[in-house]
Image (cartoon, rainbow, N blue to C red; front, side, top):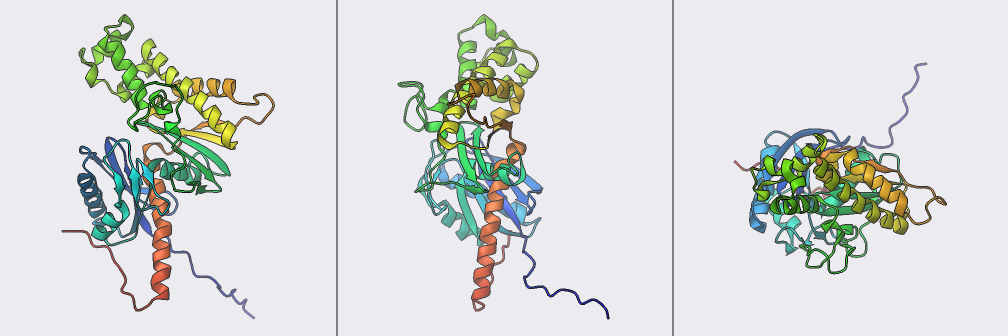
Length: 351
């Protein structure tokens, strides 16, 4: 007798394409991502000013553009700010004019498919744990160095959000009493010493003061410190400029000390460093690791978690947002199946 194939008791898992959007202080990145974390298409727009409606229009424009090329089922948004526990309202952003902004509802009303919103560091951390440097790790501490410092704790591929959805704002822990003023309104926040803003601020001050050690950076911008950027400093360090190497090393020192404090609090199995500043690679990570090992509480008498470089680069934020949106798309599909009388929403890009 021919062998009888086993009866299938479960339906095949639906793996829709989703759009992830990462909103930063200077740019908006959007990408179409599949269920394996593969990026199929990317679009980029500048963040125009701080107007919340302009940012919303940019999001909708990006979704429209991507929907013309791909069949997408949901949208995930990683926002630079405090997002409430329902993952729908941006309560506060230090870099954009969001104050209790119902971002999920506003975007969903215009694109007519499921939308989720989360903190951009949460989305980047989830992506690294699912598809990047944290694969196989259960307790992962992530720090994202860009305009500021984002952070997240991921436990078994689930982001820890706290009581109100606002956990992980490590960059706004005060490390220097009465230190540099931060956009959040406080002084001496960690991100004022270990971030892209900190790197550029210190370099510009030296150029502005006509310091002889800043001659290379001064030449790069024709003597105008306001034109100096983080990527220029990073490239100068790669090219061997002593000042740029020192400035990135200073950021690494501050980062390592802060991460040691985070490790003492959360006892992670690994620490992942990502964001734009991490493009400096070992120029940043080596001083970070030295400061981390030197400062870690109980050093020499406990396992020391490795400090790893993120693998997904600038795509991590929208990859993680897209992965969160995939869960929302599946929930929406299950709900429609339970309510067959409800019309199915299909995304159609605006003409």
